Image (cartoon, rainbow, N blue to C red; front, side, top):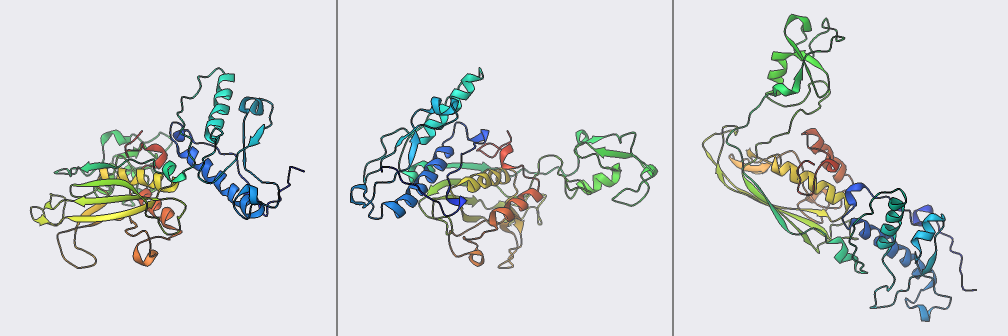
Length: 363
């Protein structure tokens, strides 16, 4: 009997069909993901059926992860046609990579619908480390503006809808809306006295009721540079991949009119932060780039740790400045970090990652 039935202990050990977001087309994260699952499944098979690591030494027939060899037939007929995908020490698989097979299936489907096929270059590799390292080292420069216009753009305002009850109270001053000139926010439709809304937007450009941000956020960071690279250092709790290293070099300079002490000098700051080089890390990196380019990561003020004034300090968006050590050391592991950091960026109006390009700009 050359076939063996494998009973998995739980559904978490099953390899799912991988559904790709459109943003992944033209990139190789998908291949990395598939290779990761394939490697994990092969590890389970090796543990159960190839305990000595080499197929010819196993006491039972070798168990192998298989990949489709006839993608068009498998797709159109609703079934998969498989062939053994052999592994041996020091030799990469000789059959085409899984991603190539899936791209073929996608092309077949698109062609069947009369749509041009995807142009996707695939590099097949058994070295997952090389596959994960898709980020090239690069720098972003932020030049702080000499002034920040606080307030609300006239384009963000519209007349109140005729159905709106002007006998209601203004949510800001609590006077009746009909007592003064009223306007509505185009972004959400909430209505206020115009003067009240202008005063509210002088401190924070968001709706006082629903907190929806209006316009692009702008922070008070001094000028500086953000450098992104990839390192073989592993973030604790994310040992399956390497890490993204973010280095900040904020220059010393003179405080602008929107800082605490305009005209006085302020200190510079150098800092290093870490993210795991995976999907969550990539998404957070795009939002951090946007935040940096809009002056939202740093500010000038009094250091919370030393009490010294006129320092360049972190703003409200937390970073992991160590790959290890846990929460108390501002490092990993931290199971809630991605959720908390994304919420912090939501609170200051940073767009979601799917609305940003890899350079952190709007798409």
